[in-house]
Image (cartoon, rainbow, N blue to C red; front, side, top):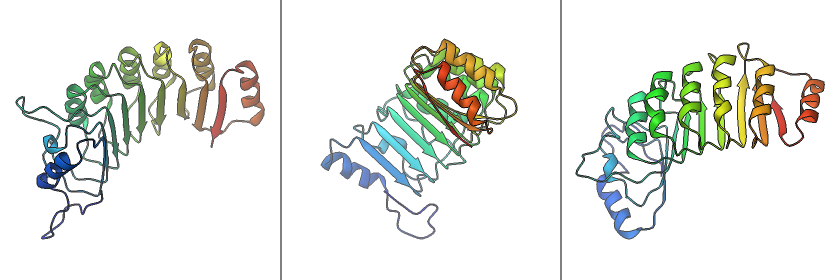
Length: 235
């Protein structure tokens, strides 16, 4: 559903009344995608409780949007995608993660998410199976708490994390269920650390590397040593 963010004097497409109608007429509604929608006057608890997948793109959300009254059951969101919403911050992440048992979480273009936000939310994300972090201001500390609490992860993507170093990357060696790792490498992360991860992650079968350029011969030799894992590279 596409709306008009911060519409001035215009009729808003999305409203609590419309969501109530959706709840009544579409009781099996499981996925709700909102794009360019002003949510400042649409309470989070008005989202139908049947929705398990919520995707927000280029939306306006207020500071306390994910805070709900203890008397009102929150939506049972299991899959959350937040894309290009600069106002989404650490406290939003804590609010949503502490209310729901998230299975997948995708944060893209949310530069207000920091190491401290990941640290606070991580204990509530122990059932997470898929995590995507793109253009978030995270570093080694975030990786420590990902490795400590998110032991059920099967898919992990860390992109544009310019402050990540070898010290942080080795923290995810505890993710024994990890099957796919997508990682941008910059000057602070060595290829040797990535190879060490391949040696200790038994279920890793797909490794996608970005950022730093590698010689084809180097990648070929790594692939030969780890035939069980498909290795790809995007400069």
